[in-house]
Length: 395
Ligand SMILES: Nc1ncnc2c1ncn2[C@@H]1O[C@H](COP(=O)(O)OP(=O)(O)OP(=O)(O)O)[C@@H](O)[C@H]1O
Image 1 (cartoon, rainbow, N blue to C red):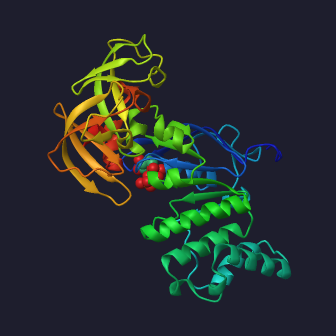
Image 2 (image 1 turned 90 degrees about the horizontal axis):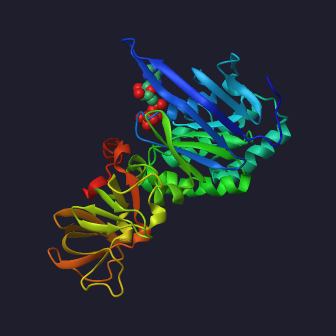
Image 3 (image 1 turned 90 degrees about the vertical axis):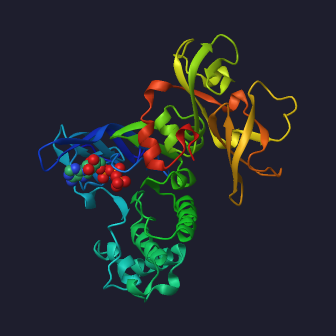
């Protein structure tokens, strides 16, 4: 086993594979050759639909599962290697864990729950008291120190779990859907606080979720998984705006997909012929291996489709006469469903103009806001099912 290296990444996963056997002997490849690095103080979010292998990946990193192949390093030290037969137990990996199943202990007060990780390490009493007080304050539960978990709300219990995790001062924390048991409002509050604490304390995190909004809100980098493998890794903005596959596009939010045939890729705005009409896409948003005659999908997020009652002034090539089918008020924005040449189009806007259902309008989208993806790479049925999102602009 190699020793810790100060400049090494807090977590490095190399070619990790985990197979399970089902009851009837059938093999499941839960994690399929995944490589990943988590930088110091970085929050990496693993996002994907149910059954894609997120939890198994995290459990392998934690040491709760023995990988079938590959390696895991913590600060340059090998903590798991199938080849070398190394499998360091969870408590000796130096990772904090905040899993749904790692609930707080009901028979201990908040203070004792939070003290526990230091008590088992025989941290001197004065230091223990000081560290526990500090963390209780940071997490905002100092006033609840003598309470028992049964007397706390779900959100407060999650704070206790977080405090218990942070008190040991881990440089990496593994989170498995830690906020899924609390209601939406508390969840959002905790999310913001978690980020604030992460910035203040500086720990790195691997955070598993199937909730794309949660992922984009907290991630420095998102790792999108599908069927055990990594589909795309990048900052949330990049993965959202420049998805590499239709699966990623559909999983990260609502998307319009217009399938068609590429006409010519020589100019600055290649044209794609679709049932909606010809669509111009900025050349830099067309993959280099796509050529004339290829079947592709043009991808448009609803917020890049502008709707107006008058033909927009100075508009570029993509302006389509449309019928507004329905418009729903969503508070910060309006959601619009349109029909363009028999195709459904979904748009999202500020709703400044008063429009009526059934009204003739114009839909427009700038070529630079559209992307072309190969039509064949779609695991998109999966994406649609998982996210409830609107690939093909179905509501
Ligand atoms: N102990 C096990 N034995 C057999 N198969 C398993 C075991 N644990 C997980 N699997 C299978 O491995 C695959 C990945 O499961 P995993 O729990 O990692 O997915 P997930 O992405 O975390 O899903 P979810 O979001 O629903 O928790 C699934 O097909 C699952 O049925």
